[in-house]
Image (cartoon, rainbow, N blue to C red; front, top):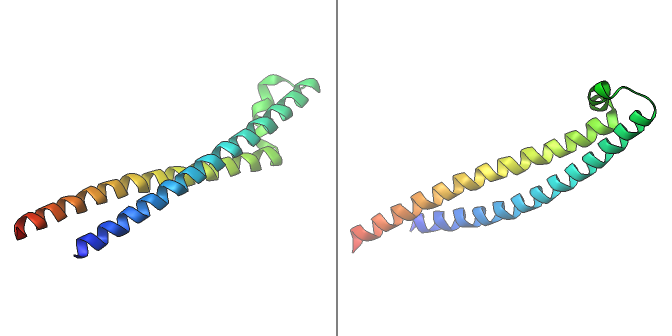
Length: 109
């Protein structure tokens, strides 16, 4: 019976993590969009101001607003990837628990 309760908990967590992953994935895409737009505007402004294109990447990375937007994007990337890893681990735990249940059920019948 403990295996059934465990399986139920794992499935609930699995479903919750899928929802979380979708949420983080959307937030990551939105953060990427905002970052890319701001970066494009920054680079265009610097090019129009006569700065050399070869140094603009380094300049952009040092610009506080651009760096903050990149950090926001990177945070959502980490959260998304961590949630994906937990989903993979839960799938394995669910399969193991299901196998144990089948084995236990086979012994009692």
